[in-house]
Image (cartoon, rainbow over all chains, first blue to last red; front, top):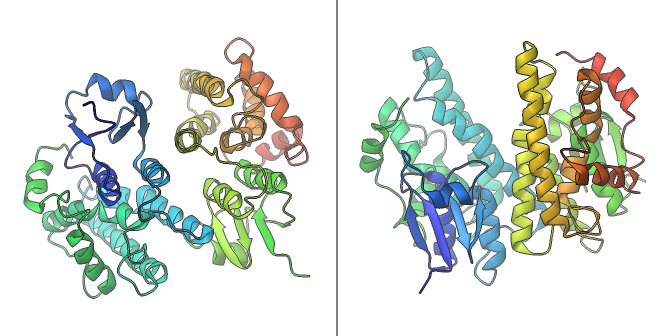
Length: 221
Length: 221
């Protein structure tokens, strides 16, 4: 039988991981089509002609791209399961705001550490990433309302948005001999990260740090 | 009486205009607090400490920033009026995708024309903006389904996202002696733009081109 849900992705991609977690949360079966960076498939080029990037979700032959948009789509379509977006409009807006912050500010800073010129620049970027995590620790305290996740009892948009980067955060820690997510700066996030990685929807799609480190060696700076 | 809805903005900002259009569509009364670029108010700095940018919507003392996020909030909160987001999940995702394209690709390209170095670079950017508009013409044909707006009979997310830039598009046309939105390349968008500017929710907040040109002279390249 032809699969109703296909995901074009690659295992090391944090953006693809987000979609896999959402589909797992919603108990949606899907066919995972592994893309290779060096030769993109015709299906990918047709499905995302604007950006030619993964992830692409194909649902009933209709393609969608951009991970945060896909997450909201998954939440809309499989709405009978636990919600990814908060039900309160203000909480929902705040979750969208911080998810965008993670993608547009925090992650690009962490990503740029690898190519940084000189030790001073690297140090500055590392400090900036840590400041961002301290902010996200405060957001966690406000959003979780004393519960396990940003989304409360269940994973929500912010859990998935930030959690997808945990593997690459660890790679960055190892590569630079620093602790970014540490007990002193972000005690709540340290515990949150453990809970996140142990979650049923996450544990089978979170790549091992060693495997990511090997993969990272194949990348350009 | 203290106003329940406040908007921190500035009249020339296309992002602020978006929020005003959405509030007008929903018949929401609001207090408009004009910010000055050169000296940001304490209220702005407190309300949007991350980006320190307008627009900020303050609803019942709770602040929100980022125009596309505010539009979705307005749609969620004043949900009894005509919807800004499409009701179908796929259409909703597609509207979000193209709204993000406008903000992350199309507008930054148009914005960069002013500071472009050399005639060749300027020409290249102008061509890119026109190609983007041709794409958005196709999106219009698919989204409007033969009706007046991207959102169908009513303004939707994409109408507001693109329409907010029409004033600055005209400024760019005048400053460079070119037609970006033209009959040959984008006949449907030309008609759409006329309908958009004449809409009740828009006509009182769309700045005059001459006034914008005067304002543009005060800006740095």
